[in-house]
Length: 312
Image 1: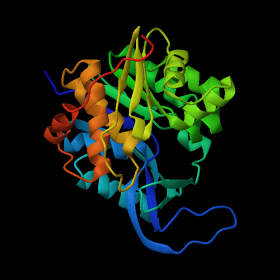
Image 2: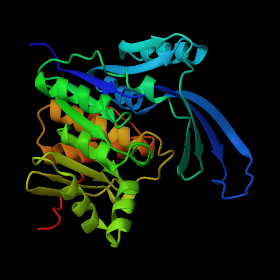
Image 3: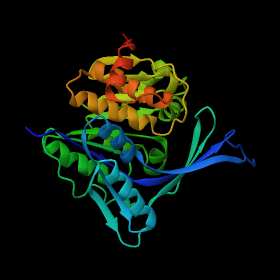
């Protein structure tokens, strides 16, 4: 029996990281203390974690034939991540982001949006097999549900990450359509704050559970990551709350992608959803803390965590 294949779908971009003493406010000026460039984007970040844990993984994306695109492709290949599903488009400017990071690891991200017709092509040729997993952010309102529908029809599992920039771009109707096509959904405190504001409630643990319940379709699993407060999740009728590891973040970029990758890897390894959640929280925590990130370290950290169900 062949090893399951994980396909991480979405924009592959160049991250330009600027290190600052503090994040700037309105009409403000801040000196740059350091800068670096790295391959980035949700699919690459999750794939990097997965390949490091021995998972068979490929990135599904679109890049240009420019120098940035070729650099990103080379870095994906060097990492041992499959690139067979990365399409190279002539004369396309490859996507990039600017990430501002302060000494506490807090960040602000500036996204140069990729054109909608380009995004619409991502995953259009993907043909996963039974037992595989397809992960994605909400990069396009039609391409994501279409790719997920094909994946589920083939017997593959689907995992969706919903974040605020994509929700602003495509809207709640698009998000709910994509959520309905996913077996597991992850979202975060930004979405929780928007949900709580709309409902006139505090964005607390109970609100996180209410958000998870409101997003469920046919009992699928919804995870609301809350940074230092850990994660609240609902799967079927069950509820979960896992506290975060007590770490000082060096840089929060990619933490949610590590959580998603940890969840996928744990479930592929046969873990229960409860254990998979703890290992996902641990995967994000050890990454944020800058320590060892191999799977044994993740498992050890996960043993210090426990589930405290909410709403029961």
